[in-house]
Structure formats: structure tokens, C-alpha cells
Amino acid sequence: MKLFKGLALFAALDASCPNDRWSKVGEACVPSQKWATTCNAAGTLTISAHIDHFYAAVPSTIKTKLLGDLVKQDGWAEGDEDDELTKTVALSFSQVEVNGASVIRGVYTFGPSESATAEAKPDVNNVGLELATPLSYTVTCDYASSIAVKISEVGIDANPTFGGTSTTGSLDIGATLTGADDSSKKWTIGDTVTLTVADNTADSLTVSVAIESCTAYSDVDYLENAVPISKGTCYEDQINTQIVARDNLHVSALSFDAFKYSSGGAAAYVKCQLRACIVNSDGSPDTACVAAVDANDKQARDAGDLRCLTL
Image (cartoon, rainbow, N blue to C red; front, side):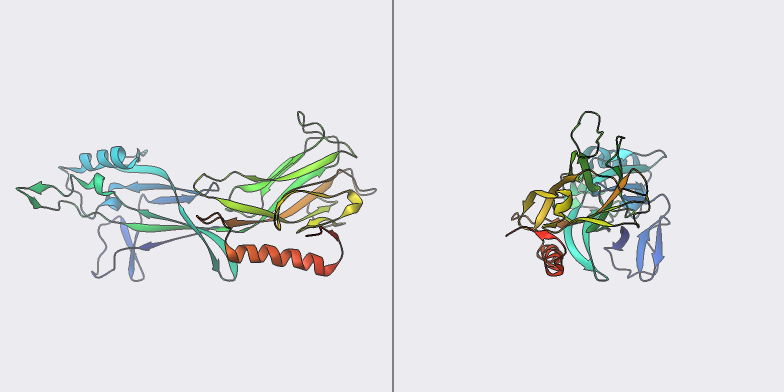
């Protein structure tokens, strides 16, 4: 589940906010009125803001120049209305725990750069002046680390449909299926179906994605006649499940024989649980996230219901 929150970087020392485009929430001032943010599934943030969100007070004599510098120096684009700007930005990521759940947290500090504030802070006779006070604000996007993926109609001679992530607002991380006929994406009983992690996030977000489990069902609601395909590095060998690609316990691709249920319709419906782990600057995945992947694998091995890889 995606969460959004912002924390004003300036203390609410004064009873009032910078201008009428900011509102008091508790002890903090937060942007409002023509302010909009969207935490995108790609792991980026789109912001629409008014010039009054960038500066506490904007003299009409330099407003056009301030807007122009935000476009030229900071890469903002003109919005649909006067004095509005919009931009999609990269986030700085970390992995944290929120209410007992692991989340991938992206943070961006909004505000004009130093190069964009030249008109607001001129030097006159070698004396620095301030004609408009720059403001800053931190926006946070929280994304679920655990991602549910649903894929319908596996094992019939028809086009399978990929339903994407079932968790609203999560990262654009899912899975793709390929079969014997890659050109038409049609499979028949007995074909080998390969399921591979699909990471469609922005380059600014590096994650290691593990397939924690996959299960087939006979109904579109993913409830009836559960047939396990895999859990961690353990798998159901009666449908010839194979671990195709893995890094330690992080399984990123697996295959199984396409099938249909002997009763209850021609299709099988596959639901997989994925876990995305932030990759640190040294190339190692987040420690706590890796521990969760390891625990999932241990749970499968302890249960003894599936055949497991020899590690």
C-alpha cells in the first residue's frame, strides 16, 4: 500500500504560514491550493506546484524571472494554469518498517535550487539581499515491499492476461509468462511456461526481486483448488516446476508445465507473491528484507510439502 506524507522543513515558529497557498496542520505548515503530488508506480514522484510554494512572498516585479529560472535551471515545466509548474523527479530510497510491514521509502526535498534563486537573492554593491524567501518541503512515498501478482488463464489455447500488481499504488513490479509460442503468447496443455520477474521501475530505484511463492487456482477469484507451484527454493515436481534463475535464495524465474483442471473449467489462475529488496550502494540487498526472504524459504523447507533445491 502506498502512503504519502510531507513534513515541512521549516519550524512553525510563527502563528501564520508563508502565504495562503500553505495550510496549518498541527504545528506544521503544509502546501495546499494548486499543490498535487503523485507517487508513481515506477518509483518516481510527480509534483504540481504554484510559485507561492517555492517562495514565501513573490514580488510581481520578479515573478516571471523566478518562474523562468525554475524552468531553465531546475527543469520544471509550465503547468496548465498561470504561475503553476510541474515535474517528475527521482526519489532517494531506503527500506524501513512501518507498522510491522516492510516498505520501500522514497524521499524528495522540494524547493528551488541555489542556481534558480539568483533573482530572489541579488547582490547590490556587494551586499546580499533577499527579495523572496525560498521554501523547502520533504515529500515521502512509501511502497509495499511485498507485492501480489495475479495471472489468469494459464494452460489453455488463449491469450493469457497479466493483471499486474493487486496492491493498489505499489511499485510497477510484476511477472511475465512466456510459453512455447512466444510470438502469439498462446500455450496449450503440456507446454513449458516460464514465469519471470518483471521490474518496470525507474533507473533511480535498484531492487532485487524474489518470487516468494506461486500457487494455481481453478477460479478467477483465486480461491478454489489451490495447487502450489513454488515457495522459496522449494517446488511442486508433479507439474515439473523448475527453478530457472536465482541469486542465493532470491528466485527470479521459474517454469512449470501448463495444465488445466480435470473439472471446473479450462483455465488455471496463478497468483504469486513477490518481495522487492532495496539494493544498497555496495551492491548488497537490504539486510532485513533478505532475512524475510530467507525465513520464507525456511518455512517451506520445514513444512516438507514440496521438493527443495539442495543448497
